[in-house]
Length: 302
Figure 1 (cartoon, rainbow, N blue to C red):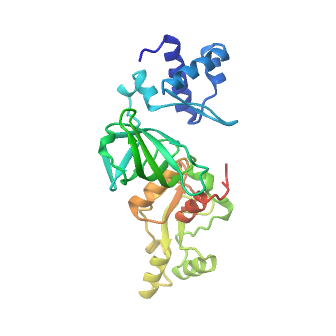
Figure 2: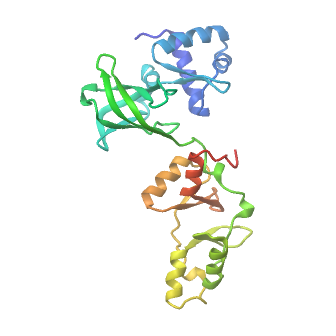
Figure 3: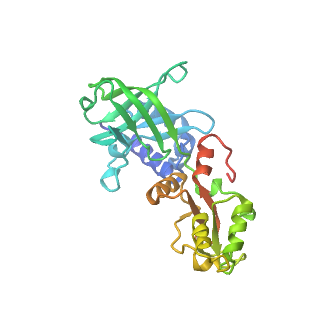
């Protein structure tokens, strides 16, 4: 596949803008950057789509996004980490096989949904009836689970009956943090008895310990388990700084929701303290918050 100079320029600019903004790029944006006629860009985009180098995103916020093949076509993957989307069979990644494109073609069907999975690799590694998992994708964290219904070995396409689809919004943790004024804190000098009353009255399972209510520098965290253990040992009049966990698992407010899920899974915890760049507490994100988001709850801070 030999690209023209103009096509290479357009792809390079598309990738540069897409990497910067992490969303679909308008043709007019590329035209302005390259000082070219928007009509020329539109025509070239049609050609690039035919070559599977560009995908179109419909809607008012739509535009164009580069495919993995686009990166390779202009040699970018020689100097940077290859962006690959894995496919799993029997809960194990299939080595040497990566997903290039996911197309849902019967989403309006009453009883089923099917999809065409364009892959890079050997389709003969899959058989009808295999249960596969695709993803998560790099930017939108889409995961698809389905059963192989057929395959096209010539065009490297797997046909699957979709069992389930999940997507984690590509947004920062701060987007679902509750109003900071509603945050509940304790100072290190609070007694364990006071802490137990607070968690009981607020019906919460843990609370961050901060240096003071003004600076809110994180010093630790105390949970119901910590309190129950200390009460059993007769330490109710002791202070929380004696029993708090000081090595707190935190996440930056600028990290993405998917990062929070991975960190919770890695450390086997149900909540993370969200902090800013100065290690000041901005809120708590829990598995429940994330599940509410995935179930369609409105974003709080977007």
